Image: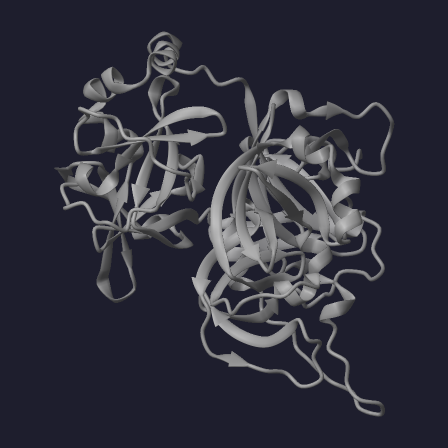
Length: 462
């Protein structure tokens, strides 16, 4: 069964959830530039992750009171990016998609910007509809009568670069007064746990047991496993799954932010260091060690297994390595107002933008040629094949997907590259009826149906 990886945050008296693949980063807010005639929830423009974007007061938008919050959750929508101001980020969780999709009507009855709702750790969480939020009437900038406001949309190059170059999201945390990072894919959940139940006679690095939805999970001190003195501030934990299905809760001092980094900023460790496989080089030569939960616990695994309560240890000892079911990596793109998916194995490369050179009107099948750096290739403009209110602009430089089409390299133009998701094969539902586009399957993903394109059928028959 498919799972959604969600970032959860507090806004007023509501707990909200945002799909993690729509989150570019989590940062502290900087100086604000107000805009005249803007709605109450539209606070102005702010510089976040090197890009100027609108700052939205999420509590005001949802009609609830909010304490002063300085945390911005930067998300991507169809038109660019938004900085959502919240009180705090509370957790990262994995939730079964069926559990979420079953409660859409209930959530929309609470607010039209909610896709669905689910219960987690005794609280109701509301899944936020980012695309609907971005076009909400409550965010419109209205000039006074008789005046016209002109605005130029910010260039989307940075957003496209973040998505298309597969920048990896890392969770930055503080441990023993120092900054470390965890790759978000290795963290099942980030949460503020309930009371710790101590385990008499256990080593210092075992803090005790926490109750994770009725299941006992061993809590470990990340500071002591890294060789730092333990601090009294360890009050938040990251839940990680190790080999054999063993779950552990790694306590850290606090979570700092969620940021994406390109591969060239991640370096392997040349020397052995407990729990650290690689490191990030951030601005101003700031070096941050990247912790591998498996490697961190590996040094004490034998002793740890002997301390786990019997019913949990029995499962761990007999489970063996997990055999994941067949799945496909699905590249999701936007064309007009529609979302489409392409299986990633057919995509050779993704270019953030290309300039299309039109072909003579007598040319068939392709819409133009594009220089991709190491050659000139024919390009199909998928935007022309999708019903739109307006034709694509001739001056636009859209993203281009490079693929092998009938034995040669070709390009496919789209409006925006959104995300790459691992989707179980059984989530692909075959399409039985004909379509104007070469659609082979549909996939339910994050509350939306994604149409899967068959690349070999995009080229019209001669």
